[in-house]
Image 1 (cartoon, rainbow, N blue to C red):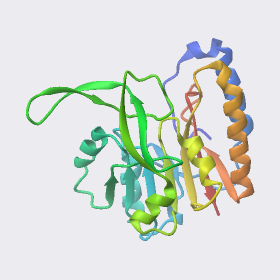
Image 2 (cartoon, rainbow, N blue to C red):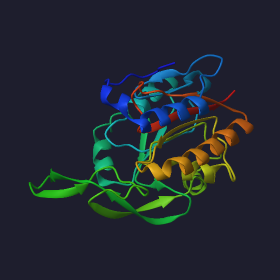
Image 3 (tube, rainbow, N blue to C red):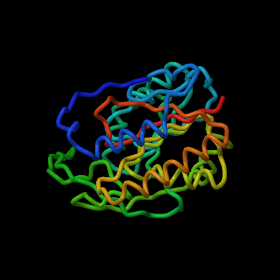
Length: 250
């Protein structure tokens, strides 16, 4: 079930790393039985399981809210978006007309407090006409950026208390390498979202692959034990930079 498609990059065929990752993805995430999730923008979910009162948390804005905007249309629910960068806050101003997209300038992590993010920087022009360097999408985990900044991060439980929510119906994590840690922390307590969408970045170093896949398989087994079914959200045959998955309870 190839829900998404990407450009073909034939050179990858000659890479042992490519085939190793492909084999692990197929072994850990076989296509399940039953109805497939519905593609919505750049992700997929089961929108028919959500109503206008659904609590939806979407972490990671970047420059793409197609999935989030689509959810507001098909469910009439409010989507709470979270990202700690000024770039994300500025980007969300362009979607101010959609009052069902609620932006919050916080990151998510396993503890509350200011965390150091690493990022590539880009030059932008301010409203006053000055040219400044600004961080793009930041990552707690990826140390390849040329700049760093501090940003407030909160646990899911703290965010729920701040927003007055007692449950999460859909949780999306596109947080540049931190989703595995956040999900492991989530499964140590509550809540248990009805649907979880996660982008899990594959380590670049070969020595990190085995520990990563051990943690990932443990996570997937825990989710299945908790009553979730897992659907791979495949970006195309040649995409091995990340593993994207939907976990949903019936």
